[in-house]
Image (tube, rainbow, N blue to C red; front, side, top):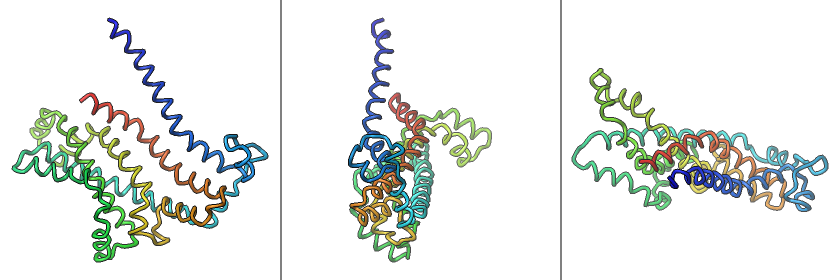
Length: 279
């Protein structure tokens, strides 16, 4: 009885803690955003104040748009991130379905092999990866980044989705087979919709590292036409390191897309995490 009464209090405390942690995490982002719309004097005079009629200025964004092709950088980052997530979720879900549905010799060993990428960072093989991209003519192309990020994200995707695929009802799949559905139809029409929250979780976990990565864009695609938003922002900041308006504006343009994507996937992310916790 006492335990039942304490549950609402525990739930309220969890919500308060979550809101508090969110506000603490977003406070630096908030400071960067408000200062990106202020003049340089206003930034140093009162960095925590909101922009007003006297301090408001767009000089930073004007400098950013004039000196760098940030729309192209954003397009490159968007294509790389979306393309990588598509292949990660597609191949990861297919591999997870195969490992959980079909029993064959070496099943456990194959699952362990696919999970090794979680423990071994892909950056260790940077030199070998660069050699392969040079040999295949993919240097300074977006496909080089998409392939690398797909390989980087697959181990985690297989590891997470395998557990959720095992939770899909065997009766449902067998009923589909009795109705004449092919294995591909069972996978796409029955299994995938049921593990959608887990796929959203995998997407968020891979999306942020891909969008914010600087290493592989600098190594594999440093050309102006293939620069990602993170690389373009870092190059811009290096050139205008003392121009605080431009620096804060560039950081704001790099941060906002990640926040928007996170908000879009946040509901599915929470559902995926809580589903895993219940399991």
